[in-house]
Length: 180
Image (cartoon, helix red, strand yellow):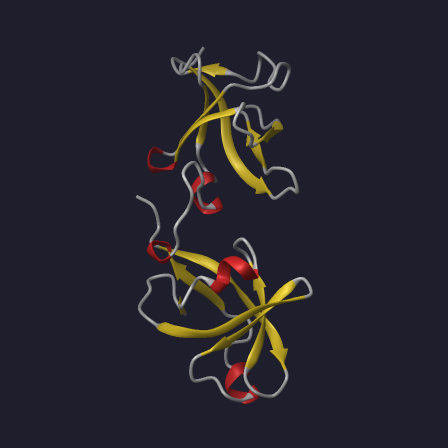
């Protein structure tokens, strides 16, 4: 089952004296965060706080929360991870949250008996993202996240189906489901 509340980022400092906080955004950036009206102080979504404003600032965002009017009040949030509710965000078809992709088993789309490994990391790129896939021997391979390679993404069942570029995976890293 997919987690309902996902990490948005972490409060890393203060900005000014009126309660604005420097926020290290772990999701898709300040523009993504602007769509979110409520953040949560815990991973269970029990402690909600309203978002007043979000704006980009250098390599982070400046975040203003409801009821936080002074630097002293903002200081209470320093070092705190804030969460968002996945139902508050619409993802385009074929897109997924990074947290949902990590841990997915990676199969060959044309021969689903072939398991290449598991997604262990997601790297953001300018043209496209790349997934780190670790095989049974611990070898890591970077897989470009492009439509011609990623055929199907099934995060609910933690599976990804690829049609890898020639030479991307060596034969010895792929294992069959029957263990061979």
